Image 1 (cartoon, one colour):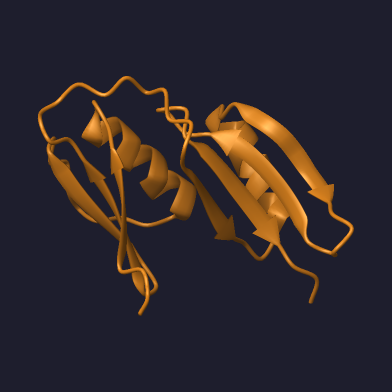
Image 2 (spheres, rainbow, N blue to C red):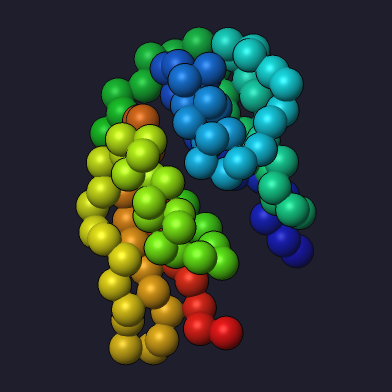
Length: 115
């Protein structure tokens, strides 16, 4: 078994989808206001609004992405004006991690592993 999809429920599908398109460097050629699917590798990332209002107090979910060059990704986030929680820090187990908020204040982690 494997995870086939992660869905972020939001009040503003277009804004959050555009954030992730820029963040991930992908394009889905959609501006749908209800549902957009962003596909990366084997797992889908969906941005969705089911018609209910979201309170954006997301405290029980975070997303982690493995990246090749965390320094370059950090610079890209700064250029995007993203709110950084923790700058890139090398962990005792060798990985370098950083965290930030998306537009709905979901916590996102970028991590890179030594060669």
